[in-house]
Image (cartoon, rainbow, N blue to C red; front, side):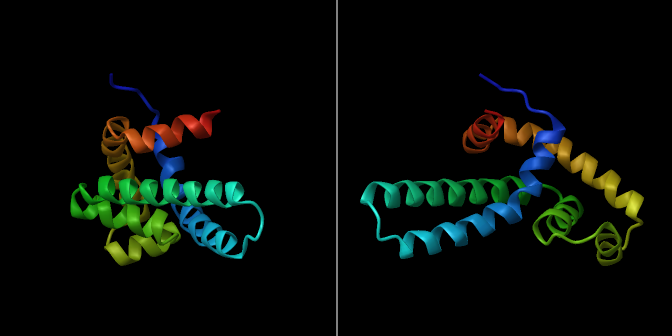
Length: 127
């Protein structure tokens, strides 16, 4: 059963990449320092593993894109650069970079719809 997602949801997943990466570090730190119940520690560890799986799946899908699309998405969403810096590094205008990004987002939309881990995250975030 193929599920449909919107381009905006694809963009949100990419924009949340840095936050997810930060969450992994924070949750690892919390899990190490936790002296409370084993149950609470287990929940933190499960959430950390869930974020790790999500991070891997996002990178896997992005890595399947053509080089210029991948480079622009990585610079913008993973390296968190401004459009002017993305354009400079990739030797395109900012408008061209945004057009390439839009094409890449459409491709990722299809890929994300077929990725169970990412779809579970999108559905969970929608609740």
